[in-house]
Amino acid sequence: MQIDLNSDVGESFGAWTMGDDAAVIPLVSSANVACGFHAGDPLTMQRTCAAAAAAGVSVGAHVGYRDLAGFGRRFVDVAPAELTADVVHQIGALAALARTAGTGVRYVKPHGALYNAIVHHREQARAVVRAVVDVDPGLPIVVLPGSVVAAEAHAAGLRTVTEAFADRAYAADGTLVPRGAPGAVLHDPETVAARVVRMAVDRTVVTVDGDVLGVDAESVCVHGDTPGAVAIATAVRAALAGAGVRVASFV
Image 1 (spheres, rainbow, N blue to C red):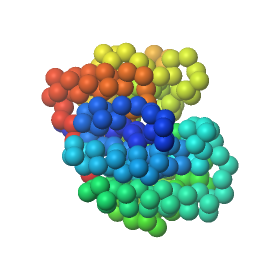
Image 2 (tube, rainbow, N blue to C red):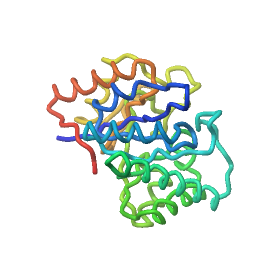
Image 3 (cartoon, rainbow, N blue to C red):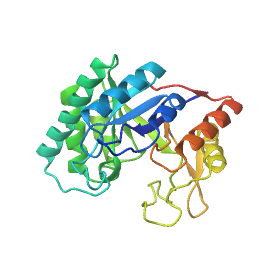
């Protein structure tokens, strides 16, 4: 049995530090590297790619809205053609910096508000899919199961990688509980670890209302900017090993 663990990294910007990438990266198998639009800067991107390469971790382009001030967590009503160009720009920038760090971009994962928007926003979903196809139709895209972007990607011939979230609460419909709601983010390492094992082995998760929801996921996200992220990722790795689940990238 195998599962991928991914984490959002490279989100520091200039003098501002976000997360402990040096500790998180060796604990995961895929690194979603911020591309400078919601977070990150060229040197941070390059250094993060180098750290991932050194750890044998796959690099993905973590693309988002052009929203540094909001950390990409605010919906932006951007025109489809502009969104496509923005995503192409981000993938291309990271690909160039990854090359100088001895690795390459192996997949794409939208960030924050963009990720949540394209669960249901068809125009923006198509714009993101179009960008990936235009850059490299061989790049997989990480998606929420049952989302509009998953359907659009499938129609365009892209490989989709379905994802679950280790430290985020689920609503009954399989979407994530908004971050501002009580209990939306989980912080206890042992609770999160047990949850990930259940996702990997039983393919289920308990929703915020206490219902049991089926989970079809090739990858599980452990957020790098969550307080206690290193302790959470460490506990998750130990619990998966104890359950006989191998951690490996999907690419």
